[in-house]
Amino acid sequence: MKSFASRLNQLVPSASMAMAQKISEGNFEREIIDLTFGQPDFDTPDHIKEAAWDAIRKGRNGYTSSSGISELRAAIGTFHHHLYHVSYDPGSEVLVTPGAKQGLMYLMQALVNPGDEVILFEPCWLSYQDMILLNNGTPVFIPAKENLEPDLSRLEEYITSKTKAILINNPINPSGYVFKQQELQFICKLAEQHDLFIIADEIYDRIVFTGFTSMSEFDSIRDRLIVANGFSKTYAMTGWRIGYLLANEQILSKVSLIHQHTATCASAPSQYAAVAALQGSQNPVDQMVKTYKERRDIMVEGLSDGPFIIIPPDGTFYAMLNMSSLGADAENAAWTLLEKFGIAAVNGSSYGKSARNYVRLSLTQDSNLLTEAMHRLKNG
Ligand code: PLP
Figure 1 (cartoon, rainbow, N blue to C red):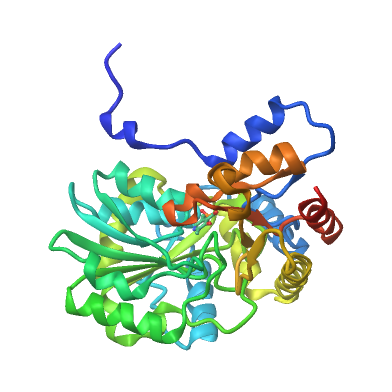
Figure 2: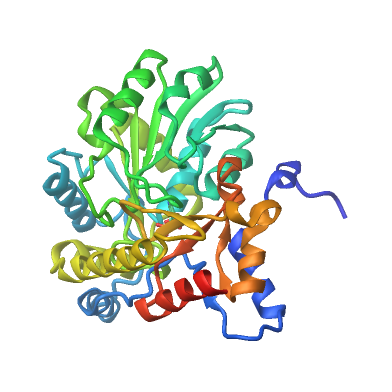
């Protein structure tokens, strides 16, 4: 058999899959508390499901316009304006994609030439690296500060003649860090000075416990910015595969070509469901975010007196737990957590070297289970 494409050699299997395998193969004394999930533990709200049923019953089951049904593009434009007072033209500046992830992959395909560098702040979501590598680009990681905050002070030092884009995820999966306005402003300034694209993955923008500033609010970088977002996290719709990109017409017209020749369009019923998500009551979202915040408070308060230190997240439904007190075992803390405490988490090293002494805990389990997990962490 002929060989596979060499670009595959650099890809790393997903850390949460490896953990799932370990759990399924293991023989554990007590029930495992699984804190690896990257998706809400809530179901999609009923009115959203109804809208999909309605679309299916009405026969809206064919291909749609490649960039998305006009109702959805208009609803996305209106909602983004409502949240951030920034306008994107639904006709040319909104592209509906099968999930934010697919949109991000399109962007890498559209922007990255072999050898181009894309700057990422550690700790960051693993898939960015693989998407860049798949397009023969080079991911460039800026190590985090001691407390896992992104180190903006080192950004300029990492910009080279090969840098194509700066990618920020705000709020950050896995740390829950929310960028401050001045930090975003600083990134904009450097992107302008060095003529770089900015990719802002804002998929967790609605799951925040303090204020949030969207990168799109900075007018001066509008023509070099692409925002990726979607419905997976906010509306508990991970399986519906529906997301979108916002950018000026010049950028989106290029990205759309890739979408046209690969996915054609996002799933039609999911698009109608997404319209209902944006136009219907936002109470289910408020309720989910309130619950994540309650869980975060339970974890942060419960773990405040050691032995492991938790970094309080300001957004997302994740939290990073520092396992340095395990000494030499800290780098593979997730395995130790599983063996000793019956808790499944994702190894911090999956998010970059800066997080190697951490694990990512997911707050997508009910508060009784989280309380039990804390109890185990404190008492063994
Ligand atoms: N971006 C980040 C930072 C994520 O954590 C995820 C999912 O885990 C995604 C994007 C993917 O979102 P979607 O389900 O819309 O493809």
